[in-house]
Structures are given as structure tokens and as C-alpha cells.
Image 1: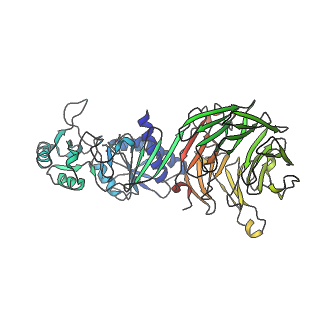
Image 2 (image 1 turned 180 degrees about the vertical axis):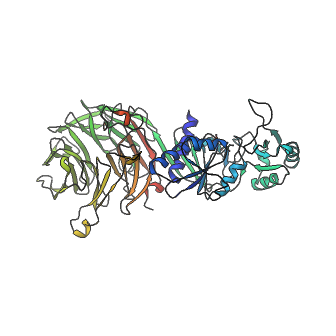
Length: 572
Ligand SMILES: O=C[C@H](O)[C@H](O)[C@H](O)COP(=O)(O)O
């Protein structure tokens, strides 16, 4: 259902941003939008071993906390909450909010005032210019049962409009709140209201009123999701940024090996190569699939030197160039075994291929012309270049560094061994040309430097990631993908645990973790502007036929395009 998707994306974006190891006591709101938020909180608590106590705003919230295995607290024990996350019936541009459409007010407001931050999650239809533009059911007001007729009369007398006693649907008579009070819904003429704070004060001064569903000046941040999974974030009546996560339609039908945005600040297009033998072109802005071309076997890598041309190679050993404008393909040449890596060096304007035939070849990007070949000690698994430097990772944990200015008579500048004990999976160079990040199949990442000066070499380090603990057993996942954010120098890693982490390598810190994707992450790419991250999620055969252990739905191959913010990608 589109609304469910909208609610879920808002809930997940808020939880992703606010729940971490520094948060210990939180308020849990009521309604339908809070349901995916609590599910996500429970996942994070389990995965990151968070010590979190949840204070409910209603009986529904209490049940939600308990059924998701979270620790329950109460306002009797805790009056200082790190934050509260709750749904809303309407939020206006002044940050006023109506709540209580589902029958809660007093407990919700108590939780909200105890929280240092009050975070609202809702679908985009709840966001309006003025209260009452969207929400037509009136302001919910909790009143003492004995006083309901008096308060109804008094509200109508003082404020005009019409007050309706909220009735149950399956049982005759007024609805009871969690505090066993009645609810009046005050239907007002929004054109006559200019100051919601005054209205709230007037309502609260009427005898018999316990609490109102008007939340004035209480929201710290509000997240609004839409049916495409876009989330808009509202902070003090300014839209700070738009976070988008959309899933591309018509994804590859088998494992996705590589994704790349078109370069030069024209990130409208994205290409993806796959084990299904295809290279697909998508228009990211329009969310449309544009075109595909085929190889005669699985395609293991591709690159996108300009918005109209791609290069690709795979098990059929061929390097192909494809022009999306003319829809013509050119066979550039062959390797003696599968082509595992296809990379474009913008600085040298050449295409570089690495193969399981233990060689790397350099290609003229304009014509089928091989410019040089270099021999490697073993099968090439990964390569990347920055400026004139090329780094190649092969089987047997070998790493060699080459000078791209000498491709006619290539000899390595340096041969190294990976600092990680297990097979190399991915290497990506720092945009500042000082080093590279290398990941292995054993949930670990190494940060390495080119300069052999011992003082610089002292700075290298490695860290564990993409691991989880389950009943005392540590699950360790391959780190398949690395992508640098060129503007901030930070990087993302994607693992077979289906998670994407953002790292600040210089300060040795994790910046954030996105939600878990349906299957392992096989490729990541930032757009050249740094505002989007493409995330390929597909089964990578780590579990062979024993797919019981594999995360979620291994039959799906998906490409997600996430609009990323500075909050997620910039060093703090
Ligand atoms: O009384 C109910 C609460 O105020 C809810 O948080 C509010 O009605 C929004 O609910 P939903 O998330 O189901 O739209």
C-alpha cells in the first residue's frame, strides 16, 4: 500500500538518524506510523546491542514495545527521555501539530514534554500549510467523563465551531482514552484561527478539559514519507534536505555485479551489470529503465566514462563498448579468461580491465585499441585508480601499485601483501591520492597509504565491520563493496549482511548505518555530486544452496538510490 510505504520510509529515516548507542530512554508514540519505527528500533537494539528503555504513550505502544522484545519503562520511573518518536494527524508550516486522532492525548503529551527531542513521523499527506487544511476530524480534546456535556457547550460558546463526542464503532457510547476519559472532537473554522497557542490555552482553561491534541512548539524534527519512499525532513519550519530512497524498476534478474552513475555532475543515469548477462541503463530522476544490452555470459563489471557510453566485461572474456545514443556496440578486445574488473581513469582517459587470466590491460577509450598489458602474480579480483596510480588486488592477498603514465613498459611501483588475513574483495582509492581502502571476505577493512615513509606507514590500520552476534555466535560477512564520497573523503562499505555503513576513515569513526537491505550488498556508487548513493542488493552465493541463513529475500535483485545528506556523509 502506498501509504504504508510512505509511513515506513519516514519511520525508518527518523530511527536511522536518532537511535544510537548514546540514546538510552525513549518515548514510543501511538498509531500506525510508529509500528515500522518500533520494528526498526528493535532490529537496531538487537544488532548493535543497544541498552534502550522504551516508555509508551498508550496501551497500544506498550504492547508494541513488548511484542518487539524491547525493554518497557514508564513515566513513573523515568521523567527525562532522550527523545520521543510519535505519529501525527497533521503538522502545519509553523510546526503546530494535531495528535489524538487515534484516541491518545494526555499520555502522548506527557511523554513528549519529558523528551529532550520530540520527533514526528508521518506520511506526506499530514503536512499542510495550516492546521485543518488536511485533517477534517477536528481537534481531539480529552475530557473528564462527568464534564463532557459542560465542556462541549463551553467550547462551542467560547470558540465557536462544533464539538462532537467521539463514539466507538463496535460498541455504543463514547470512546474511552487510556486514562478512561472521553474524547471531544472540536470541528473549527480554520480561516478564523490565527494563533493556535491562544486556542490551546483557552481550551485548557475550560473546566473538565484534561488535555488537548494540540502540540504547539514541541516538535524538534518531523519526517514525512511519500509513496515512493522519499522522506522530507522539516526542522523548525525549514525543509533542510530531501532524503530519497527509491528502488529502481525493472532490476536485473540475477546477481548485480556493479553499479555506476554517469559522471561529470550529470548523475541522471545509472548503469548496472549483472550475472543475467545484461548491462542496464536507468534514468534515476525519472525512476525509469531506459535500455539494456547483452553479453553472451554474466557481466562482472562495467564503467561509465561519459553519459552516453559504457564499457563492460565478464565471463565471455570480451570488453564491449556500448553507445546508448546510437545503440551500437563495439568489441574492444579480449582477455584469455573472464574479465573481472572494468574501470575508467578520467585523468588518463583510458579504460582498464583486470582479468582472471592474471593480467591487466589498458584500452584507448575512443577506439578498439589495447595500449598495454601488465602481468600480475595471480587472478585479478579488484582494481581502482586515482590520478596516475593504479592499485590491483589479486588472489593470494597480493596488492600491486602501478604508474599509469608507464603503460607501454609497465612494471609495478610496489608489490605488497594485504594486511588482512583473508581474501581481498574490494579496493578503492582515497580521492586525495594518499592511499586506499581494502576489504576482505572476513568482515574487515584496512586503510592503507601509498607513501612508504615509515611515519606515514604507521598511520595504516584495519577494523572489523559487517558482523553480527546471534546467541553468542559471531556471524562474519564479506565486505563486498566500497565507495568513496569524493567531496567529503568519507566512504561507504556494503556487506553480505545486507547493511551499508558510512565511515570517516581519517577520524576512525562510523558515521552511520543505513537500514538492512533485502539481500547482501554487492556494489555501491556515489553520484559525482555526492548527493546520491546507489546500492545494489542481491544474493552473492556466500551461503551456496543453504539459503536459510541468508538475509531476507535472496531471490530479489534490487537497486536502491538513496539521497544522502551531509549528516550521513560528512565528517562530524
Ligand atoms: O491518537 C493517536 C496518535 O496521536 C497518533 O500518533 C496519530 O493519530 C497518528 O496516527 P497514524 O500514525 O496512525 O497516522
